[in-house]
Length: 234
Image 1 (tube, rainbow, N blue to C red):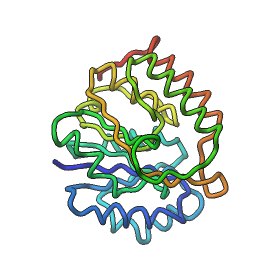
Image 2 (image 1 turned 180 degrees about the vertical axis):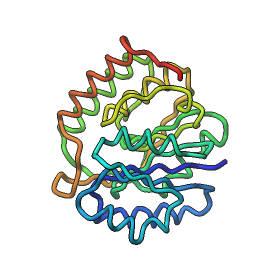
Image 3 (image 1 turned 30 degrees about the horizontal axis):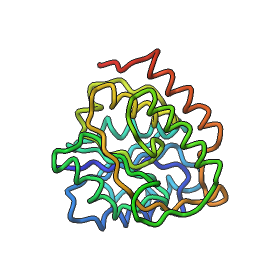
Image 4 (image 1 turned 90 degrees about the vertical axis):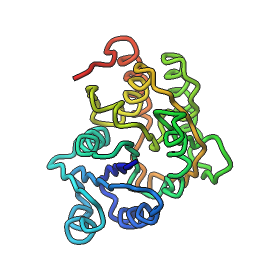
């Protein structure tokens, strides 16, 4: 199976090269790397054009900043793999976890796998109590609306068979893509698994972008896609 690793990127000049190198070290996996620059302004785009473009299979450039969801949608559109794996461009998520993320799909137990920061034995940086509470609230609401029992709906590590996104319309351009994907996977009857992953969280001063406003927006998007805008096919 070919795995399309999609890396949305916005202003990650200090970590992008490092994360690309770690991804490429997972050489026991047949993969393509698709990098999406969401109109970075800190020198990231120039670094990609000068050096990093040679280290990946495809680069997509957004000419205006559209958001993580838009970057993911661009990556999905250009993906050739049987499986799609979303990887953040910072160093919070460890690509060495790819084998455990992919195994349930490769073994034909799962259609979708989420990497949970809150289960399993891996290291998990202790940070931001209220962010954790917010995550728990939106994950619980999503579970109520989908009858799932996820522990980490907002995780970056979402891995899924391409067939579950190629024929549906994804609408969200920002962090609303997380609940939208989850609900639309559930509405299609996907077999969804979770595995425990490592998590090296970073502080706002280190470049973390998600805020409490995104948590409030997540509640709106959960209700929107659960009750008012069910999955639509192209």
